[in-house]
Image 1: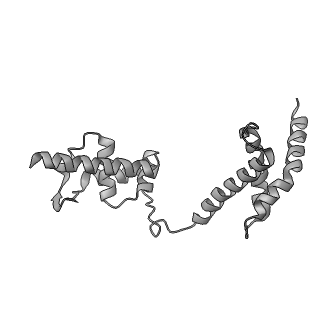
Image 2 (image 1 turned 45 degrees about the vertical axis):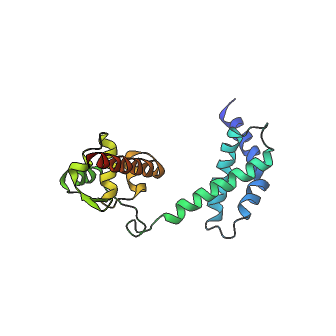
Image 3 (image 1 turned 30 degrees about the horizontal axis):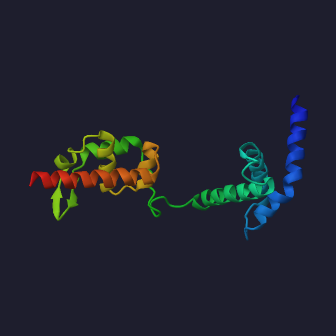
Length: 175
């Protein structure tokens, strides 16, 4: 199949599904740059075509929901553009800044009414987990830390809480 036929088939597909695409977008009250979003939605319809499983749902329902879901994610990203990162708890930091902060700072953590410093945090055996705990104690958000380690903020939260609880248990053993 040559490029012209491929383009023609895709154009026909998009035009055939245009009413569903528009209907899905019309459920949202105000869309800035409607034509740009509509163009994105046409691309999303091509993505939906690939991921659709006809055994699980009807095409029109799937496309409607897929475009809605993609638009919500798109709108969320657009909404956060241009915000002051510090105001919303997003730390704009370089990895070298993180390394310097981890190794040059004295960290204090309050656990069970006691204050401990680096020597206690060194009890965390996994270096990555230790660094995550230190960064969070310095005030970095789970989201900012997660972006640097390429994991979700919920994973960072889980690691942090697990390590703090492990430290608490180790401190009970020391008593």
